[in-house]
Image (cartoon, rainbow, N blue to C red; front, side):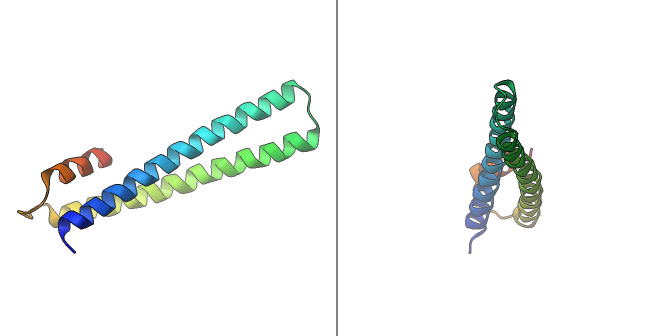
Length: 102
């Protein structure tokens, strides 16, 4: 497989992981607001407890996703270190990779 193709795949993986982390952060914010609203409206304790569990799961997913993102960024950095001297390397892909690492 060409270095450009490997780099493109790694870039797309990192992009997807960034989106995943952002999604879980939004979900966590939404769930927190929902709990606050339920408490304000004095909803049933059981319902609030269940929503709190969902919120806590979202927090765990953020941590897990951030760990996986870090791992993928490290893999991208390792790949860049291996292929940076390739004369056929697409500079646009290389530049994109550097932005994803930054």
